[in-house]
Structures are given as structure tokens and as C-alpha cells.
Length: 435
Image (cartoon, rainbow, N blue to C red):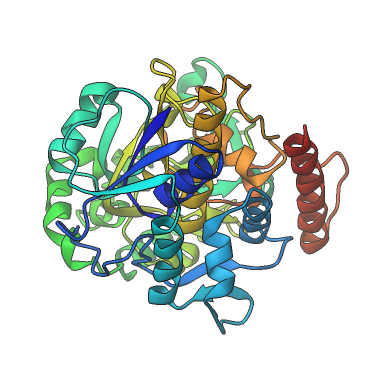
């Protein structure tokens, strides 16, 4: 038995070591040092590009809970992080080069892993894990597209996602335009004064600075009206949004019995209805500005944003249409995807998906049942999120408490509630991996 793993980023390294430790021969393909992507500079594997932080360490936080689950599955990323840790308060930050060197040494010293320095241009036949990252492009991207069809995206134009429980439902009403069909949308009505206040703050807000390698790519967004940042649309004129994503036509506010001046609509992001995205609000504003400006919308004053709007260079597949929760293709069970190309967002999330893909590829080859992780665990929740077929417009997602099922009891204190959620999830997680 042999498995080809394409890409030696965090996800690829996790997959390779899970397979190798299960006694399976691995061919790990990595384009460095022959070719470097625009974002990568260091020679080693598992290179951290945008940050040296792997987020919070507290187990009652989403990131802390995720890292604890990864640790219990033998994560090389978590092991390397603690071995190369630098001081960063409550976050787990690392020395980037030492972190990369630590993982690279583990990979190179494993007798079951053969490293092949090559730029892969075609998805091979056989047992394959694709972990090529969000900058996948060129012939390899075309090869992936030939397998995935129109479900391969070359940019990430995403709106913010908020938790349902953080919304002020006293100001929001559920309805569909003209009462057609189910009341699938939550509507935040605005009068003229509220709208103008929101508009003026939006057009004056500060945008994020693009990285050099993204600037040329992002010019393509100008071609697609549907991908236009909400702040750019607003700058076309005071009423432009009211004839676009904020149009109030066909909606009646039950509190006033009249049509609002403008309406911000929210659409369910998952089948549980615990997360909602702001329809038409793809944006390139800085995260702090998003929090400030979007909280001016009635009903969103205290909204918890679990995924900020982004517009950046990102290649990812529409996983809910293609993948099982085990990270393999529904139509080709021995082809797995791992990392940010699957729509998980963030370093530790990518690494976690690599662990799941590696374990399940090994179990598939050994004719064992796939690893079933509970939805109450963070890895299980992410796995279910990227494979939820009910999702209409898929957006990449990082770990957050909003994707976990609610507790059976009501705990008002947020810290206590999150702690209870984490303890429940870890207990369920331990039972699952023991079985």
C-alpha cells in the first residue's frame, strides 16, 4: 500500500505522519525548493506565512479546544508548537523557523516517508491526499477543476458570519420577499436616519491592506459585480445599496406595518440555524472596522462575528458538494483533500483536517470503518460543516463555538457556557476515539 500526499504544508505533514505511523508507505510531494509560491520564502515544511500565532491556549476557547483534540490524536503541529513556543500571553505562538525545522526533521527522519521535490501538475491515480493550500494555481488547479467541475473557486469573496444567539431578535423579523415560500431570511429593518448613519460610516471605514501577491489577482474582482465589496458599492451613491442587497422591496416590518427604508438580510449558514451570514456583505474592511460599522445595523449591535468578511486570493473547493465528513470525495473514495483548499480556515484548522484525512485514508486502506467524530467536538463540527450538503453558498470557516450544538441547559455566563461546551465535546471526543 502506498499513498501520495501532495503538499508539505501543515495539513500535508499531518496526513503524511498519520499514514507513516500506521505503517503505510508515503510519497510526499513538495514543490519547494524547486518552486516557491508568492507567499512562501522558507525552505522548510509547514511554513507559517501570515502569523506565528496558533491562537488561544484556553481549553474553553474554540482554538484551545481544537488543539487539545489534535493533541489527543497525535498532532505533529501541536507537538512542534509547544517545542518551539515563544511568549505571547494567552496565545500559542512559535518561532517560525524552529517550528518548520522541527516538523521537517520529523518528516525526513521517518522511514515510511519518501520526499519527492517536484511541482505536481496532475492529480495522479491511486490513493491520493491533496493538501496544496489556498494558493493552488496553474496546471494543478486545472487538474483539480477537471475532477471537481465548477466547484473550484479561485478567490474568497465572503460576507461576515454571526451567531444566531447574539442577535437581538426584538428588532429582527423573519420573512421572505412578498411572503413567497418559507421565511428563510432574518431581516434587519432600517429607517432613513439609521440607514444614512450606517452608510456614512461604511463609506468612511478603513480597508485592509492587500499583500503584494494578492494585488494583481484582486483586480479580477472589478470584473464581477457579484463579488464587489459592500463598501465599494456604497461609494457609487447614497441609494445604491437600497437598490441592491439592502433593497426593502416585498418586505413589511410587522412592528410598523410598513416597508422599511432599507433592510439587511441574514441567511442561515448551516443546517442547525446557529450561524447566519450577512447577505451581499462581502467586504475588504479591516476586521475592527467591520465590527464597528456592522454593529450600527439594528439587531446586530452585539452580534458575535465568528467569521469576518474577506476578499483575498484563495483557492478552495465547494466541499459540501464534493466531500464526505471524512475529507474524501464522494465519487472517488481514495481521493482525499486536506487543508485550506477544503474550506477550513486557519493554521490549526488546516492541520486538523490533515489529521482526519490521514487517519481515514489509513483506515480505508486497512478496511476499517472511518473515524466518526461527534458534532460536539471541534474537529467533528468542522468536518460536518465542510460536508453539510444543505449549505447553499459555501464560505470557508475557522473553528468557533457557533458551529457546535447548543447545550441542553441555558447558561447565561458566556465563559461558563463555553467551558461546559468544551468539556462536553472533549468527553464525547474521548469516547469516539476510544471506540
